[in-house]
Amino acid sequence: MQDNDIDGSGKAASAGVTAPQTVADVLDAAADLLEKPGAWGQGNYQPRSGCLCTLGAISMVAVGHVPAAWGSSSARLATAAAKTLFPSLSGVANWNDEEGRTQSEVVAALRAAATSARQGETK
Image 1 (cartoon, rainbow, N blue to C red):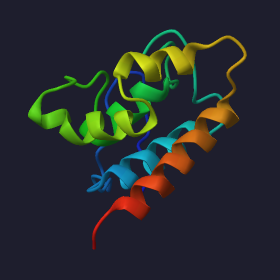
Image 2 (cartoon, rainbow, N blue to C red; image 1 turned 90 degrees about the horizontal axis):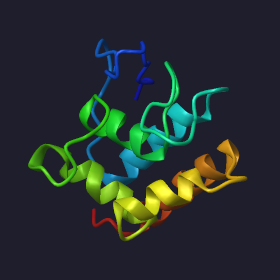
Image 3 (cartoon, rainbow, N blue to C red; image 1 turned 120 degrees about the horizontal axis):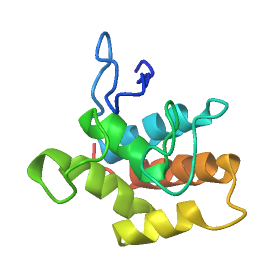
């Protein structure tokens, strides 16, 4: 899977990007996106150009834009991925925005959730 680059428009670059097919794929791709220096932020889906919060990254990789229409059929995979981290979307947002939260903690949590989701998937 190639990276989803953000051009400041709130949309993913579409050329050559493979859409994730599973919750684990979404979580891993969100971690990949947020792992880049300066790619993670707090307080908004896209606090500044080229920067996303946890929900913004999940939305970007799952549906190709920020924010997802949470709860809609098109955002089903994004919603399921976010709820792997916390039972509610507000829980994810609050966790992301906690004072002292770091980019490396967010990436590690996404990777751990992806591993957990992958272990629960049936083949």
